[in-house]
Length: 441
Image 1 (cartoon, rainbow, N blue to C red):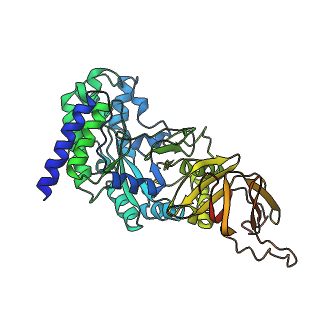
Image 2 (cartoon, rainbow, N blue to C red):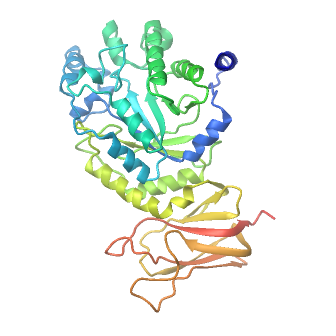
Image 3 (spheres, rainbow, N blue to C red):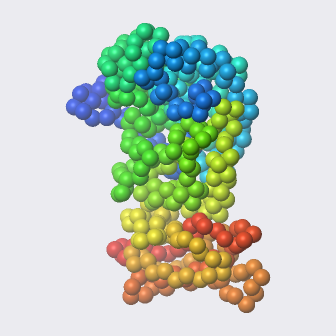
């Protein structure tokens, strides 16, 4: 049976390769697996390599560097990389608490340094003072928490070019797998290791300069496991921006928490948790996945600013996680500052009220023009019972819903104390049952 599956995949690859000649991206992801991936919604991206010790851009400093710089980068930095405070279990638990459903880890970035145990090179984590397979620990910890496992891998390899005596670059033909057959074979062998040494891998994110290399590696992945979902390299993965309009699913937007992918100890500017939550709402309302990047420091710790932001996101998701379970985009993404998701196969809509400075105990009335209520509509604010405002027994916080000529009128109060100072800057989510678009019968 496995031989038949392999032959089928190889046949599809041949057909896809012919399509590639016409300028198309090869996508052999199975529709059911793509649908599964789209339901994950929120994931943790991790950029980390041995050059984090100097707080620099990951990998790219090798391009244009002097021979002396490259020699010290290649031979000295691995000797001092010892992230002995790395705790994969803590990362996995934090990701799960925040509502993330998958992880994508940089097994190898463009510098060629492997954060996994490989037989192809000594330029890896095993030949450092730390000396343990970080990728293995991440796989085991995140899998134990029930999160899907994803690997980032780059076929660009500056170390390989350095060993060949070639100029480290991004655009010269010999720097690319299509113009460097030894490199082509090398990265395919590493891809086979990653796909076979760590159990079932759910997601592969293929970075790098040329589509040829990503396609060749995607073929390796699909041949080994036809169920794997290839994201970058086979689908749209907008980087550091969200499309204005929904894209045909599946797609995945990936953002940094700060300005830089890898940890930068100084001159960094972090997003607030509120920024991240708003991006999550916008991306999910447009049918995309949100892959949020974290950059551990040289000791393997999540920096204070990232850990604190993730904690606030976790609190918001603890309150509102229902809105992301088995939900799909509404045909209308938003009305002004209200975004929408709906329960799959149900007339239940979640309205995300993205408003600033909503004081505790304040009631606000909003009209949603695109929706109408059925015969038995219900309304609730996620996390609230709608019965009590603390220390105010005479106040009625009950939410209301009704049809009007202008649209569906909702009246809700923020009646849930989250912080001691009663200030909570993040969006409120209103659950609306038995409601439909006005355009529906």
